[in-house]
Length: 179
Image 1 (cartoon, one colour):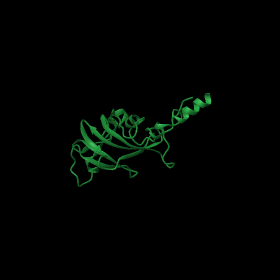
Image 2 (cartoon, one colour):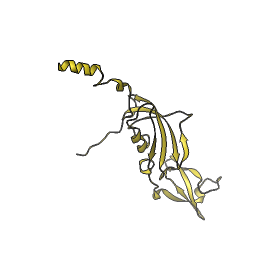
Image 3 (cartoon, helix red, strand yellow):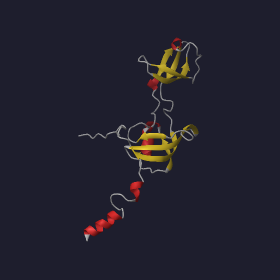
Image 4 (cartoon, one colour):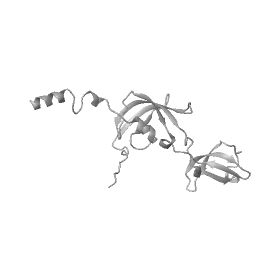
């Protein structure tokens, strides 16, 4: 009798598969494709609509943590609005990321203005963005924080596709446990 009941349960898809086996969810290790619109202070700053959608491996830490966490458990076709606080996005504004430089170190062909974005170059040749925050007599104060640091973000998202990640994809972040 027990074998007969177990056979009915398996045949009905109640255990080990069934209808939901064809309805994958966003989870670590899955390749996720989604459309999104990012707004800051009710102003749209970026969207994938009309462009290529965002594709990432969940758990690989390639998107901001607050958005990644909110996507887990979503299904294909599902839409929602996700509000992400600075600590779960690009962090709070770091006062140590403000550095003062002599004006003569700026490119000669620019007239510095507050709010002007520049490409700074480290001694090793790496480039990164900086914004002029203050102009003094002989120096400028550059802000090396991410442009979205300290700002709450609002995402409108729609999951378009969920697939198994290719074998060559980076593994999902491992969880370490303390002993």
